[in-house]
Image 1 (spheres, rainbow, N blue to C red):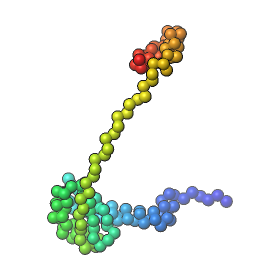
Image 2 (cartoon, helix red, strand yellow):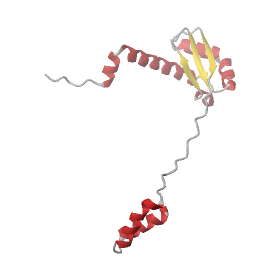
Image 3 (cartoon, rainbow, N blue to C red):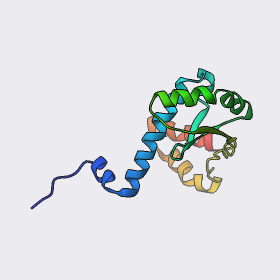
Image 4 (cartoon, rainbow, N blue to C red):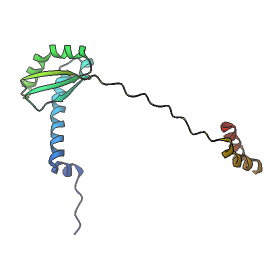
Length: 144
């Protein structure tokens, strides 16, 4: 008897580790939405919830200046979180400076040597006039 396929969400929900991660993600997303709603828009995008599991909410920011502004607003944020039924004893703000991404290496195409182009040049000389011969001639001019 064939079993009917189950949705991936049900399979992942059955795994205790994945279900725990999903619950943590939902909790952090809900808390982050409240925090961002109560910060000025330019700051809100630079604040992330690092840990919402313990009694103290931990926020991560990109720079020290942003951390100072968020720290000044912590009493308002705690009060707003309490109004939304989230119980935190306080808020810690950590600065996590993101390192710039490594510079990407420039892609250098593999250039064929002259010896490998010789058979194509010979073929180009023997082809009758037409689109194939002109395309091959253009290719050889670019490569040579």
